[in-house]
Amino acid sequence: MSNERIEIFVYDEGNAERLDKFLVQRLPEFSRARLQGLIADGFVLVNHVPAKKAGQLIENGFEIQVRIPPPVPSGLVGENIPLDIIFENDDLIVVNKPAGMVVHPAAGHSSGTLVHAVLGYDPDLEGIGGEERPGLVHRLDKETSGLIVLAKNEQAHHWLQDQFRLRTVEKTYLALVDGKPPTPAGRVEAAIGRDQSHRKKMAIVPQKKGREAVSEYKTLVSFKNHTLLEFHPLTGRTHQIRLHCQFLGCPIVGDSVYGKKNPTVEINRHFLHAYQLKIILPNEKSPRTFEAELPEELKQALEEVRRYE
Image (cartoon, rainbow, N blue to C red; front, top):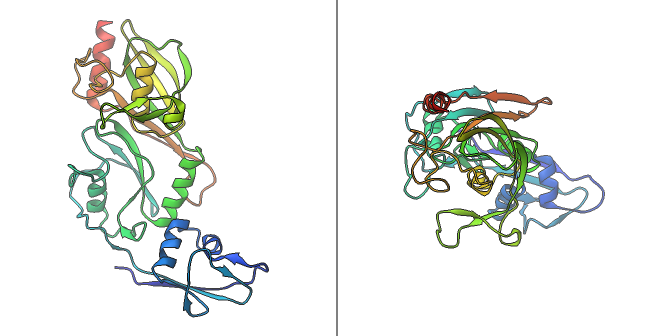
């Protein structure tokens, strides 16, 4: 396990400033919330005295000492689960997730998740948020396959979170849908919120009752009864593409929750795949593009549609 890290700064910025604001500038690898947590837990000293609060004002000549404790075990045990790794460096890992794998441990999924698999693959992970675990910045539904990026350390997690928040990440999905959208290409702006009658489902809701959700799409191949669409979600809401396809009147093939109860094509999952991810990596200036081709079961479903339509 890595040792405790200690950073010492002397404030010389002129005007008095909030302690947490100053530390965010000096320790950019940590989020403000994480630094506020260190202050609250007594890990930050101002002139050798524990800081009173995050908003404490510091002045010229003040000495600030920050003790950053080593990450604590997360309680998660790494598991030996095969991973299709598309790219990896010291900061992050890009994985092609198979359908059927849950991304994050939660009630009912205490093992076998992508997080468990990454911990099993890299047990010496530096960790984020003070815990030895990979950092998630976006998710994929259990039955959605394709590209997902996980941060290995706090700085990378912070960097990736900023890119997703500023919407500079470009995500491309492939979806086979029943029927056709109203126009071959278009933009969907339809807010998403919790379904009032089914707690585990999401729904298109009035703007004031949900969160903004925006997707762009275009037709790649038009068949007699189906359409292969390319989707670019500009926001990252739960079940966004699935709901936006339902909203357009062309639900995703195999989506038993938001689509037809019986699949119109022989398939045991929904036909949605995170095919491409364009992202700027930490400490780089130009974006990189990663791709994951359609998995075999989706290729077969597409071939079936081609053959019979």
